[in-house]
Each structure stands twice: as C-alpha cells, then as structure tokens.
Image (cartoon, rainbow, N blue to C red; front, side, top):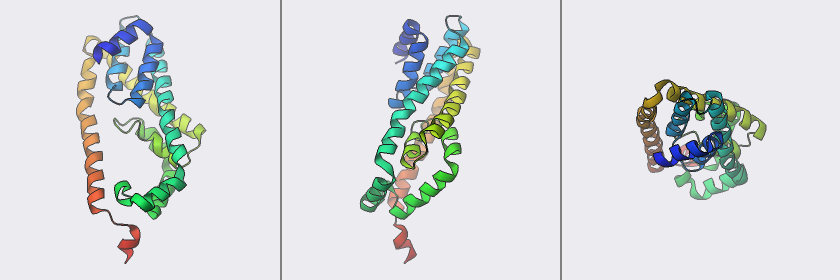
Length: 203
C-alpha cells in the first residue's frame, strides 16, 4: 500500500494526491493518514508546494464524499422509513425514530458534517445521512469543503514538519481510528440486542 501511494504521488504529483484522496473516501483501507503526511513530506522536500498538496487533497476528498451523499439522496427519507418499518431491528430505528433523527439532523446538519469530516472512520459515513435527510448540495459542499480542508491541512502540515518521520502521523492516528471503529461497532451491536420499537416502549 505504501509503495503504491508513494509511487503514484512521485509520478503524478498533485493529480495523484487528489486521486488518492478521492479513492480514500470510496475505499477506506486507503488511509488519508498516510496519503497527506506523505504529500506534506514531498512538499518539504521541494518537489511540490504545501499549498498545492493541501488544495489537491481537499479537492479529492470533497469529490470522494459526493458519491456517498448521492447514495443517501437516492435512498431518501421515505424509503428509509419503509426499511425501518420492515427491518427496524437491523437499522436500530423504527419510522418514528427515523423522524426524530431527521429533525435532529435538520437542526445540526452543518455542524455534524463539519465535525464528522474531522473524525477518522466517520469522515465518509457522515455524507450518507446528509443526503438521506435532504441537506442541500450547496450546504453539504460548503461544510464538507471546510471540514476536508482542516483535515488535509493538519495531516499535510504534520508530514511537512516531521519530514522523514511523516509515517509517525499514521501510527499516532491508528489507535484513534481503531477506537472510533470499535465504538461504532459496539454501539450498533448493543442497539441491535436491546432494540425495541418506540410503540412497544409506550405500552
């Protein structure tokens, strides 16, 4: 994986950084925690500019978030309600809870997308509810761009500062990513095991 990332950036420069960050959103095992620090290191070595790799990484990240937004948009709120009525336990939501989540997301969608783009393992997932719950494409792009810019900048600056030790950024963030993924999985399993429809809870 490392050789592939390094080779692509070496051969294609900014286009490679953008492509890798796009693919990172579609293929999570390709980690931005390695891509952007490596791009920052290349910039520190003088082969690319730091502003350029940040701009390329941000553009690729935003482009990679769009397919997931459109997946959510295509499913839509009404279809999600239907799925919740039929498969509520596995979604851990019934139609009334879908509406509750929708109301919450309408109030906090901007902050949710902005912060979500800064959280490992959540960065890609946050695009789906944005589409599902009808966040406008314009607002989605604004908040996704700012969140992606902050994320790619932090990683690129870290790689630029650490130079030959840029790979340490990934080592620092790996435990955080594992904790977030573990928390998501455990929360889901707990909700499946304890799930009851709202209507049942009211009786």
